[in-house]
Figure 1 (cartoon, rainbow, N blue to C red):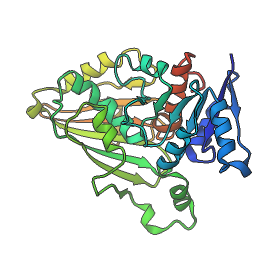
Figure 2: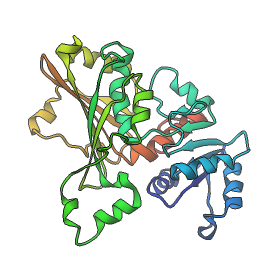
Figure 3: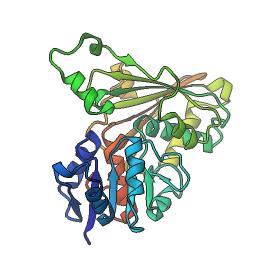
Length: 312
């Protein structure tokens, strides 16, 4: 069976990568809009309603407008923007979120693709909140370092310029207004009652992302061994989540953490480091793969009932 797929916003970083994932697949027919008609509302509406699956790779406002154009009840929308990630009636497109999430994605016609920082944070914290290891009322912080491709075309052009502007050579912290767009979904999909403090940093490399969460084990009354067991139990059998050995010896031997270690995969690696009183939890992914386009294709696979790793 062939499924019709349309990418609204096909020229952006996420849209282009989705097309790359779909290019070799025989089970999808990719509907394309002529370049000169990309802003033609009637043509976009026609293609959106002709699709079995429509990916929205658009800014938030444009994504909302695109959804309003769809009147075909059979069109499944997978929105890569921030617009619908905490909205009632939309299913969060992270199959590994919790038991039953795959069934919810399979039934839903409105799927919100997770953010890159958020995916890593949620995969670290949700199992611990569910298990009672981290109380829902806990104050949690996270540092996230990402490659510059996460900033979209304009940022990519800035970093790729030659000569490169001097300020871009060093890591740059941002989101200092405490209003980063991923925070609402990080709170909503972990069960945390307090908004986490997110400290995002963009580095002078194209892609790769790692979120680090420090924990006071003594204050929580838990251990690194207990946290490791929670991860191993929750993610047992998951194709795209790899729980690394406790205090991963290979990483500690090198002395430095490789943020780009999951690049060109749809995988998330989870690490637990620490001693008797303190821990640092790290989740690593490709911000263009599991952090964006790969996650969207994975959600499509789940929804359509085809093998989840197809094309990934």
